[in-house]
Image (cartoon, rainbow, N blue to C red):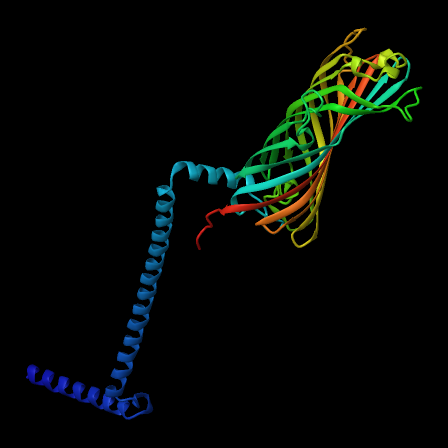
Length: 406
């Protein structure tokens, strides 16, 4: 009886549930048939899979790109290491010393530079007596100099000859038969070692209390030998180019200036043969103006300013003014020797350079004017000698440097 009652209860409950389900299916809440809902769900799942596949493919492409860049970099490094050590070292040193802002300076594009020099050389000697206040001025005969320079990268060697000495017997020339110099031109600094002779053929321009008009002024008793070196550091070396101004192996594109500091060593031997003076001077000249030999070593520091003015495309006008102050160790051979004075051993000199250049990176031509003034002082005697030269330079660059590949 109990089992029969339970069976009837479950049948009634199941019938009620079925009726409720059928009634709900007939309402608006079940308007989408199940056979239409299934494709929508499938499409949604497919879109998710497609997006996932695209992300995975993009990640794979990025990895492939990184691998290609690493491969290219490795190939460049391998190629660089395959090059001989010496050329790689030269290139690295050159890049360090010649590095610059290319909006201001176009650096040297070639390994070698060859240039011809035709110059006009002149020097003056001003002698003075502190006792009598008398003076004498001697001017060397103008010298026409011909020679040239050869540069490799930042190093250069120059040699020139005095054309006035050709065909003249020894002892009667200007004594400037050959001049040599070794130079280093970089963006950061420049240095130069030089050696030359001057004098011999000269003219006496003036002597205190003596009228020289209409008289023989020729003098062959002066001889000057000079050698030394100087090195200068440029502060604004990223924008200002010394090689563009005076080395002709770079091109300044924008006007710019730079302060500089330098060190200079100069050794001079100057001798004067009083017996070679004209006869009318031997008996009338102030003896305190005469000396036999001056020999001095000059050590000095310089602080100056340099300016490059761009006048037009490939055309540059440059000025460099560098006063020097230092210590001069010297001795003089004369009738009356003097005691050393610390004050008199202080040297004050001036170096002036100017240039005007046209340079298109392959060919160049220009003018350079230089003066160097040296002063020797003692209590009773003083000597100032000034060297001046005007150079015409013509040259070209060759053997183009390897350019970096893109």
